[in-house]
Length: 201
Image (cartoon, rainbow, N blue to C red):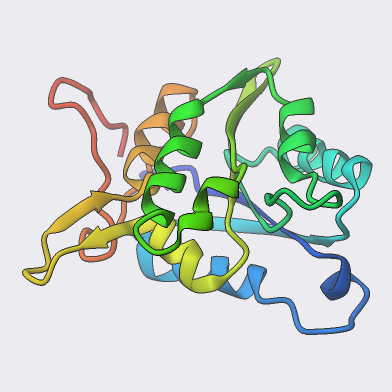
């Protein structure tokens, strides 16, 4: 009997004071859920957290998702602007072992196609590595539409990719740090792997 390939474990974190207090319905977690449902063809499990804009609880959630839940990928949404309570990047860097600056650079590049205030965004990408396990952590925008644009990129009128989204590089990154092979729907986002790389899918 052939063993099933290991499932991708994804941590989803929505950072919002008002949503965490129940003052309005959170949009971050449903937005992440919806996009992953469209984009991923591989088996996956998700662990979700809705927390306030407080650095210590964000750090605890990220550490728990990687160290205890053994997530391979953690996506956060919200808390990345210049306001004093926007501390998601600080919390993410605090639990990181290495930074992956290209992710933040590409997210701002995509957002600048729409609004000049994208330069105020402080999203970061990092790795958290512990003994025998590693995960990629990415800070995403707060709105579902912006989440989708950031992850899948922008297409021209002919349907061809004009500006690559950050998720195109995520599956290969996860494989490089020891995680499972991840397959995507190329109609949403095509995972890029160098021709000489060997996928474990």
